[in-house]
Amino acid sequence: MKKISIQNDIWLLLDERTGNRTQVLGVGNALNTNYTEKLFKYNVISKLPNWLLQASILHVNKKSRKQFKPPWPKIVIGCGRKSSPAGLWIKEKSENKTHFIQIMWPGWPYKNIDLIAIPEHDKINPKINTINILTSPHIFSKEYLDKAKIKWSKTLNTLPHPRVAVSIGGDTKKNKFLPSHSSKMIKLLIKFIGSKGSLMITTSRRTSNEVYERIKNEVDILGKRAILWKMDLKNNNPYPGFLSYADAVAVTGDSISLCSEACSTGKPVLIFAPENTTTLKQKTFHQALIKKGIAKYLEDTNLDILKKISYHPLNESQYIAEEIKKRFLN
Image 1 (cartoon, one colour):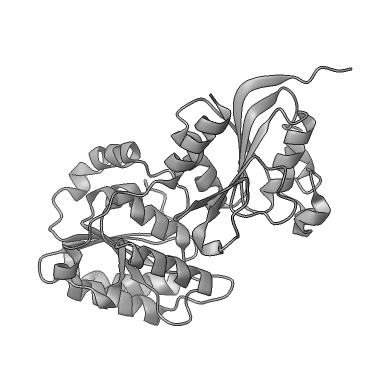
Image 2: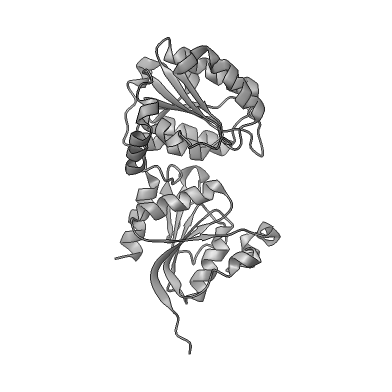
């Protein structure tokens, strides 16, 4: 009988989706040990449900499959529904010697997954192999933000207070974030910071050119008290620096990831979620943050209310990493 080859390694399954990659990398970094990145793409078969795919890499691009070979890792970490069949396949090939960690609910089959980290807003009934997380895992640890603060000190340290980092999402499959929405958000923020504060604004891949141009026009009145960065610009992304220097973080409610990253700062989070821009799941998530005293809706707050918001920075990447160490790396 052929002996199964296992090495003391951790594989991170990194697919095409930026949000999935960020969550897996966040947990990988929080483990504070060496890991191997497995970058791969899916094919059209990935559209099939997991109950059909089972433990399989048939839904992975043929070229990408070649990297999944012995020696098998001690731990494999994936994120999103489509990663689950690949993780289960690796575990199966290792004769269950590999521990598979899944971020986000994969649907059925799930019983052979060693640990599943499920967002509370998904409202999945607890299972023997699940843990609940409030926010999405991410790479924004205290150490990461501290380094960003040093890197961006010359650019951001002189900006006047209150400084608000502003994270703009954009269109989703179900909803549109319109120029009129962005206009209202920026007007509220300009009123919020008054005559002395500053805005540090980043857009995302989902931000339309029309929204970007509208924001650009709206903040023109602030002059040097506003910095606007566009996602497709070639220069370094100042977003981590913005978070590290902010007195508060304003986010569009269409992205749970952006909201989660804002919560890594320990600073008040201001959510802008006008009608028809968010899903029920996102609204449930916003309400959870508000109930815990972490966030407020932008239109419901002012500087006096802001001073009352205090919480320990949220880092679910660290929580998941600690569970992995406790259960599988002792």
